[in-house]
Image 1 (tube, helix red, strand yellow):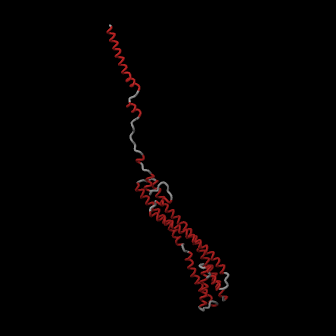
Image 2 (image 1 turned 30 degrees about the vertical axis):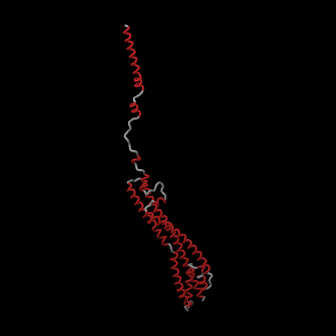
Image 3 (image 1 turned 90 degrees about the horizontal axis):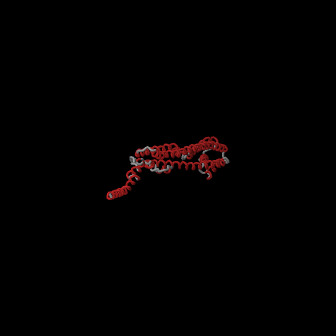
Length: 300
């Protein structure tokens, strides 16, 4: 009996020991998930990899810079000129120079006509106070009126009368009309030179005004053609690529109009001034012939 009790006690102690050993493993299995399971739950499998936009799409700015000649960010007339094709540059420079010469010509002719009218007014005042053909000639050849067209006309007419006298020809009486005819011919020679003198620079203004827009259009056509060649080579139709080249080409037309419009205005203005002075010279011609006729009748 005592032996049976000892056996039972040993068995109980062995079972308790086994329970104590197995308890931590059972507690771990029931409270914490397995590392593989936690990883699978926290980080799902990634989807199919997609390419980054920067790797497949072209940058519009870089494409525009490559096809448009390196304009960069801002478009200004100076920047467009600097990157323009050499042919377009030559067109722009020529038109700018033509415009500068047109404005210089405007100032020169304004001063010329202003001084011409002032001198003519003073000469007419002095001429109308002359009492003889000799007085007319003295006033006409004076240094004060040197180069004035009206003074040159009076000098030519009076010189012809004096040459006739020095040649021993009768200048009055029955020969009066013959003398006036020779004097009239001398004045006509001066007037023919007057038209050429006053019209100086008019041909240049007319040329710039008529051909300036077409020269600018040539630069525009060439620039657009060159721009489209660049677009074809870059294989893109992005507006950022098209705009700089076209704007650069249109700048040539703008400069052409800038040169042509003032030139046309200046040409018409000075043509009016030339015509007005021509009418004034015709009036003085009649006044001069009347004054010489009176003096010849008086025998002066």
